[in-house]
Amino acid sequence: MSSTEVPKYAELVLREVLREELVLKSFKKELDAVSIPAGGSVSVDVATDGLYSGILVTCRATYDPAATAGVRVRCLYSFDGVNFDTPEDCDASGNFFEPSFSPGSTRQRSEIFALLTPYVRISVANLDTARSVVVSLWRTLSK
Image 1 (cartoon, rainbow, N blue to C red):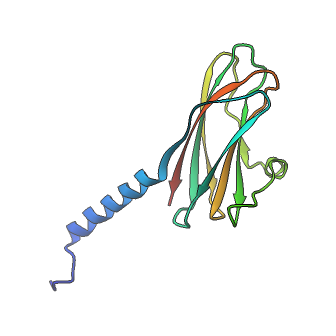
Image 2 (image 1 turned 45 degrees about the vertical axis):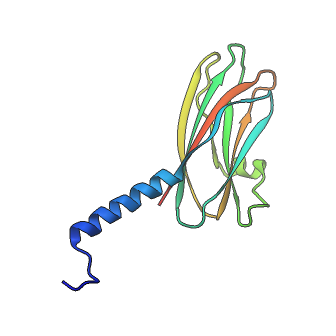
């Protein structure tokens, strides 16, 4: 073996370390128990740097006992990080999910979105026009 060749086991170890490093760097809690007012929304922008092909979005929503509607989680795309898809067009294309809804309970749901642009905006909208909701949001980028 020449001095520039890496032994097979060292290569395997290096690949595993790099894979774990990418996973750890790609996982992030974006929102931590944030209250969204009635009819309001909150958004998080993610720059993907072109290394990933998908994003797993996890939303946990805690609903008021008198709530009448849940939340909608949208994935809005952008090529420049400034101009994002509009929520109406995102809804028309079905690029959203809604965790199940039950007044007074906490619900959590995860969905995968394809990363088709260098930037995405994850937006959580409170569909209830009378009560606030508390949400936490995580994202994990995938190769």
